[in-house]
Image (cartoon, rainbow, N blue to C red):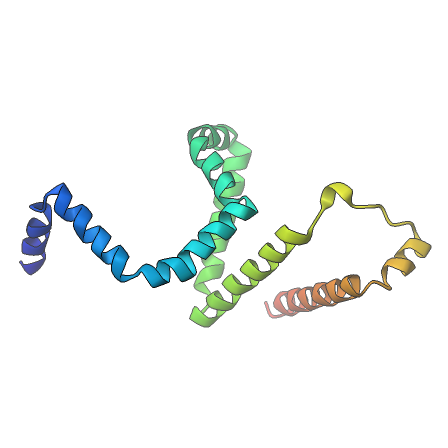
Length: 158
């Protein structure tokens, strides 16, 4: 009953009143907008994420038509979505928060630092031996080994 009255009161507001209310909320929270949201928007624009999202939004119908025309792609998407949902059900809130942080950290770092177009092939033993002297490669191998260890642990626990 109270919810219906609140909705009716909200519906009766004129567009000018709604704009004034929205501006009032914005003014009250301007520090958060300036400090966090604006910085995040600038970073998303600078990194190209907003442009990529706009391209997806503008071509969304075309992308959907492509995805749903190919039965193999549709089956793969349904398997990935189903598997992802089942995996998410096995995680508690802290696991989800850690996973989100991991994806953000690694994804952001890789996005800023990887240059696949200029990647150079590594020769056999000499090139590999030389590459192993690089501190970033050593750290990357450490991360890779940690991932492999976790994969092994997960596969043996079933």
